[in-house]
Length: 204
Image (cartoon, rainbow, N blue to C red; front, side):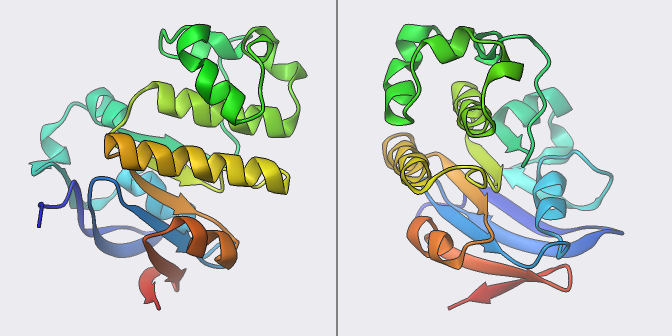
């Protein structure tokens, strides 16, 4: 069996943990738990966004040996309410052209014009889908998603899940997927864990 792509060992802060788990290429861990249980804390610690103790390895290389910007290009965190720093979505796409993004746009029910529209004029659901495209355009090894479908209708939720499953299968992308929906967790997760009392508990 191949070694883990990502290994998390006793990662903790005053806000949660210790968290320990492994994640293999092409695998999705779905994370459930009540609001305030520490799900977002977990993602932020893995992404190296908050002060912490413990260690994370990517392909056997300890995060402490990575420059922070390089780590965050490989391990991408997408917040539940992502920030936008330029007027249009296209300016956030890491140099990817509309043509290169066209299959993903179509799969998510978005047209190329959405790339050129002002982000402020997009609907909440359009921004959420654009945020996923922005994350995928960075071509990360690991994607940390905090409720990425919370504002979407049922058809769009399934489209997002299918796109992620295709990327995991085709490129070996590994995903940690936070959701409030147990049904969604069972659809997309190869493994399920629950954050309870700021710790991880296997489900099933």
